[in-house]
Image (cartoon, rainbow, N blue to C red; front, side, top):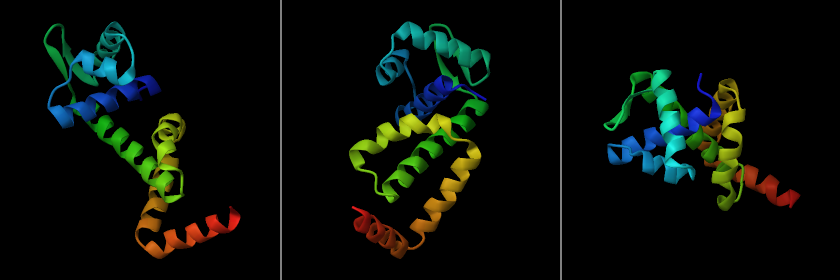
Length: 138
């Protein structure tokens, strides 16, 4: 399994590939607020671990293994955003909260959160009942 730092890179690479069709080192450096040399080092490590294919001066693409992990990481991120929104976390806090917790949850916990999100989304009454409980405690 990739480290949390590797996961951040894979997730960004996956998102950029889906959005733009290509990724540049400078795009990743900008998204992560790191130096391009740091990105190059990580890209080389991801290549070594078979998450992407990297050719010096030519660029890189995710391998099937990297793409599968990227899809899963994006799913995790979006699921946690949905979860925090459902439980009433203020919108301005959601992104940073997800960034803070996503690497610290097991996939088993992610799956159970997914069950809870599906439970709430399948019936709007449930969300409304949760809001009533929240209003009573405020």
